[in-house]
Length: 68
Image 1 (cartoon, one colour):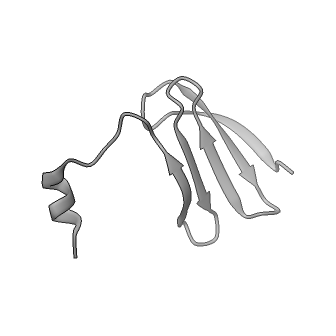
Image 2 (cartoon, rainbow, N blue to C red):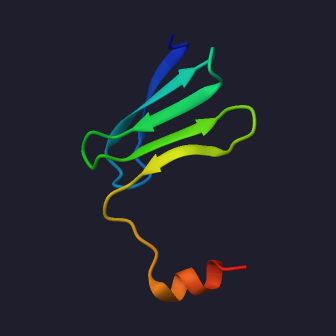
Image 3 (tube, helix red, strand yellow):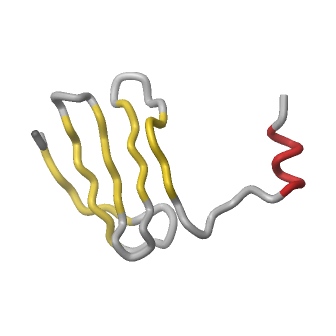
């Protein structure tokens, strides 16, 4: 069940994307049909549940910075 829906700018490509707020599941889903971006986050914790953004990748130099 969708509690509410809004149009937002895609953080990946800048085109208009759809953001669905799913109150029952406490999730927010943002998806862009222009670049196939997807981000699902938990409203309660802010944690990323699922993410997909084609064309974005972390290069080997950046991966080294992110390692503990």
